[in-house]
Length: 474
Image 1 (cartoon, one colour):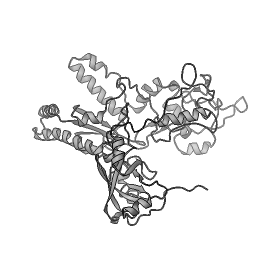
Image 2: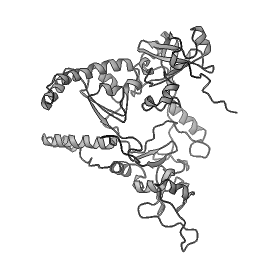
Image 3: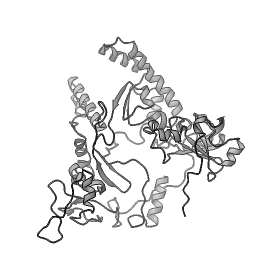
Image 4: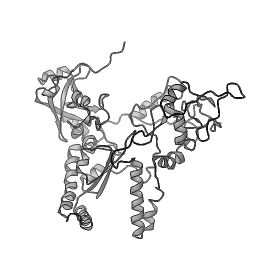
């Protein structure tokens, strides 16, 4: 509803589809792929955390997540998850070593008794991975070919330039192998209907997955291939694609901002990268005409600005305003939490830490700067609690407890704090309640807790600066 209110405002003021205006999230997920339908999930989606806590499910697959650090109600989730996965681990330990059938039977018996078998797919070892029974190592950017796009819808191909470690492979190929195995097992068991649900994943490369997904299913995807993205270089194209330089735009309406045959400047720079082909001016019969590109590497024509013609995605071309009035603290227990505890514990990321610190945990520079997650507090609140910069505090409520280092922040409001989330040495999710909205969307931000001092600034933070992190313009 907050997002909808922002879009409503941009629409009402005429700031969609024109230069100098727009409305886009400043998030970090660069999704250059085709997202499958969620029709099989339904709305509202299942509350998977609560199903797992309640003993439901027998096998849990984790793909590139660390719930121990990032989920809400993390304290209870961790305890229950470890209990259930330990049941399976203990059963596996009791099975005769090397006896595959005995191990399978032990796993199944433990699952029926309330245990949980967990599989973790990730690029690095994780906290929740310690509870898992199988790790499937995945490749990351640079170790695989990867398509991605940013906030301006600019899709690019980042090419593989080194091998992934050991047996690691792109997650799409891991998924394909799982699907192939399931198809084989179900077909051998005589269940062809179930086996058929896993057909078609004969991918050998990440390009196969891209062609099967984005190329076939996304708007304009029929124009997008690895070869063409490679020829586009770092600049890529802005989604959706509307045609190729040899054909011109094939969809009327939205302006592409591109001229057929346009060649980007700086050919020497492009060529120096060793990936993109150097585009050289070749004499032609027609003055000023660019050379014809090799077959299959035509430049993709994109969409410079969405809705420039004032038409939107509904059949009648009109935009739809979303009803987005404030509905109060609707998630269960939030109002009671606010009434009971003294501090708002707002939370989120910081520019100094990448995502949930999954790579930064091994980065000496980052961990030296942030040995503990910071919690920004107003100096007057600190004075009332006899706190100094860098002091270690416990943040606690009825959901759980965590720790953080105090960072004085004069611009903060009294009794309102901001804590770095998902940090390995102090998990803010421990104090977030399980409250969700009617669509099972978590409510991370509206969390209240008390704060108490644990210790004076530890040795590991005494060398740090606590200057303002805010940038003063002008």
